[in-house]
Length: 96
Image (cartoon, rainbow, N blue to C red; front, side, top):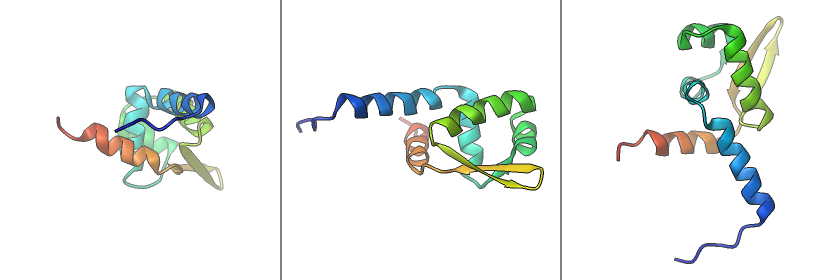
């Protein structure tokens, strides 16, 4: 099988996308959000880490278009915006 020619720009996009996932907390956030949207407070409790820490990681994922958010009054809920991340997570979670 011959590899399809991919532009340098596209390869850079993919690398940035993967870099955004390359942290244990961000992968745990993805695993929780696969089940459904969550607010920062719930994520912080589920992941047993501080809200500022969770918010920082959510910002990275959101900046790369991986997550989206919806404000409901003072509560901001996050959800998976880019479904590719679900497929990547499923591939990573398969046992070798």
